Length: 391
Ligand SMILES: *Cc1c(COP(=O)(O)O)cnc(C)c1O
View (spheres, protein in one colour):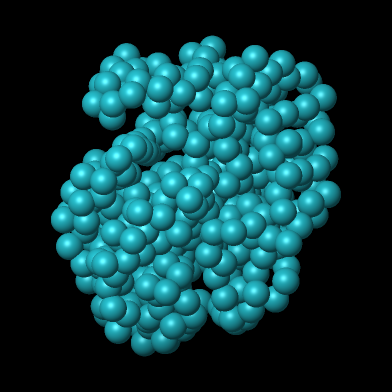
């Protein structure tokens, strides 16, 4: 039997793209071209190109909210989102998800509102009853729409909910660039601001980078980053697809894995979650060029989900069985309600309010869309044996 090995890291760049990526020369115009394209596609006042997605998200939050404001965040997410919320001096309110699409719904949003006002009421017991019952004491001012793994939220219901509660919508397209909502609108054309990540395995992947489109007038002025990217960040982004190729070519998973570990150790490769937030540095010119090519290539009919997900019982046993068959997963989205696990403790996640998110993190397995269907067939068969029956 031919063994196939999937490395979670560096698995998704086809050969010809690796060459183009490594040697691509960017020009100043690539930055302005990308900005104009983003403005045309998403509509808006201003586009800003950033070092990564979390820096773009931080700037978006600074532009529309005040320090101390609370913001609704999908309770099944990446640490980058939490980091951006904190960097903008806002407080995240994590909202539980539906197990059908891993997104919050108006029901779970309503529950988060209630829990939150209950907490406020008990802390305000000594204050006047007028203040207690006054809905304006609620500090929830915004909502980040995530479209988890490329599954669109029920935008019609959520837009209505946001309007009723006076919430400003920020759309985070890290998972969902090119996806269409059920009412036919494209993601990124609804909220006050649209945030993109161009990081590894995101829907636009130039290894690193981010962008922000300010669609509605800002409350606060923000400064667009203008410093050049650091040389070592630039090199890491340049070489990552090449290193990935070398790791994959090392025929056994063992050697490829070992090399990847060494590259991580000597910081020639960086784990996505460890990318530093930086509001001063802009996107590299060659990344702008690559991002523009990819955005232009998004399907007009709407992109498929970024990762197909399954909820399975006994995931450890399944992963072992997959490995036996030559399928090696070294990461799935997400292993904790706020991932990766090494940052989870910092977050103080409200597990008892977000039971579905906790459940999903323990039972999920998902497969990036860049694998060929044919190569995956044996793996899917194995997975299907383990499928959780939906309650
Ligand atoms: C990855 C990610 C981001 C931003 O990531 P960067 O690594 O900073 O580019 C934002 N939101 C979500 C949901 C993500 O998964």
